[in-house]
Image (cartoon, rainbow, N blue to C red; front, side):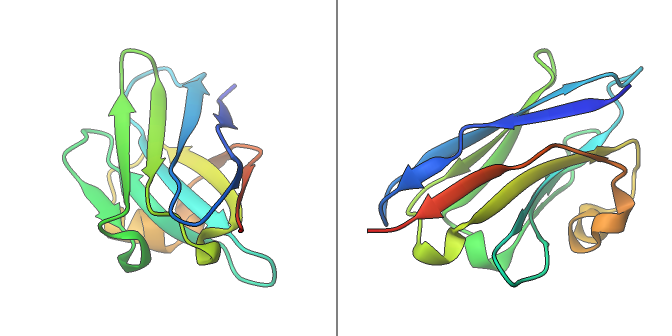
Length: 128
């Protein structure tokens, strides 16, 4: 049974940094893509950053370029989203998702139906 558990959310001020973690278990191999998605109140869920199964393919949403970065520790089966220079507009519930797929990360991050496995989400609130 695949499980994803996010952690690291919280309440921060504009300009602060946070690092989210996603612990993955249950896949029978290391071949799975992982993505970070977020959903703000009243808005649709959107892809933020995704990493391919090989690690060679990545996607980063325009709204977070230059501020966010994702990484993957395969040995620990943990994925990270480093968020710097946080803005109030980044306030949302952040989810990690995974799927054993080799679709290009642009598609994986643009359509959340590609991922079957989702974490429970972690709240990030950016407010002064």
